[in-house]
Image 1 (cartoon, protein in one colour):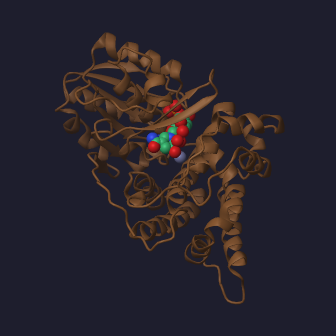
Image 2 (cartoon, rainbow, N blue to C red):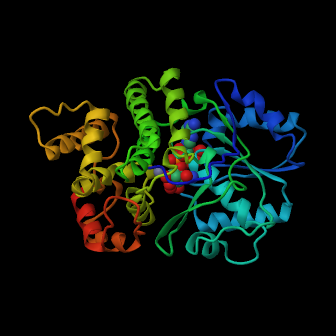
Image 3 (cartoon, rainbow, N blue to C red):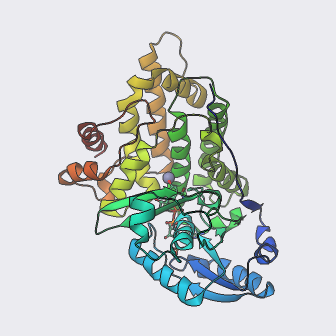
Length: 390
Ligand code: NZQ
Ligand code: ZN
């Protein structure tokens, strides 16, 4: 039975191959001074930067640039952003990039006017901003599909010194006011990043699908999204400039993690917790950490949520049930997931991401254990899953 929930999503989306034409108008209501934040320079090579600057100009904005947001943004970079945002007293933050840049903009948005240690408060202690606290509004121009950051409150920050990579889900005040989604902006992504984004999307759906055993609309929505992601991934890996496939992948990624398909049901998220702990040790690409551990993780918990794994095998992968036990059917579903991971070129193990056997115990120590899935893991089980992922 669906649990009770409140659903609100304030992010206005502009989607399509001319979506950027809406940017100047979308920026209008948000004050004079804009902090423009972006990553390591891809937007200067693919022309997105020029589109954004011309929109900012025609909206009459004064621009302060904050480049250099790295994949898996760090607490040191956050502290730099806090300083820049405060010193310039910016009215708005425009993030142009993938999940890292958008997550970063949200982090700066809530932290800029807080006088204490923002990392401790929002990420370690998971506090929320208090009502009336100053939050700088954020907007996004998305260049990489996968995280869903363009339409959610998530913000993941890495603290290498503490060996922690922690996500905080903020409320509607921190979610982007708008997001520009032009699938053509993703054409310049290196194939490996495109694939990482595809698996990230799939993992977001799986984290919300493998939980509960009731009949829930949310799970049917999840199945539809998964089928679309798989179909489009097969086209996009062969022809990355296939607009139909790339636009479907972008749209699916947004809906996979804007809270819709998780409403009214428990959620798992342990693949992400293990993946983030791997990220804290290796700084590996987010989507690859997830594909690297998913097969071992799902083989481990399959027995606790067998009915759902049978459904996954039949509905998503077309496994024929006749003459097979539930265990066989479920297992064939996970085999199919594994084959797809290999087919699209996502990581199917974690050794290539820099994980060595001597790290497993410490990675398990850094893994935050959640309770929403079919089985609450202990330390030894996490080590086992990691070992089976090597
Ligand atoms: O920095 P630039 O030069 O822009 O290059 C980036 C970066 O190297 C490049 N890139 C992005 N768009 C491009 C492009 N290169 C060429 N053409 C383009 N159009 O791709 C690289 C990766 O970008 P990044 O933003 O790091 O990737 P992603 O979107 O996967 O974001 C990863 C971060 O998001 C967090 C992850 O943990 C990680 O820190 N997540 C955020 C979530 C959320 N907000 O809800 C949920 C996710 O589960 C995830 O944890
Ligand atoms: Zn993710």
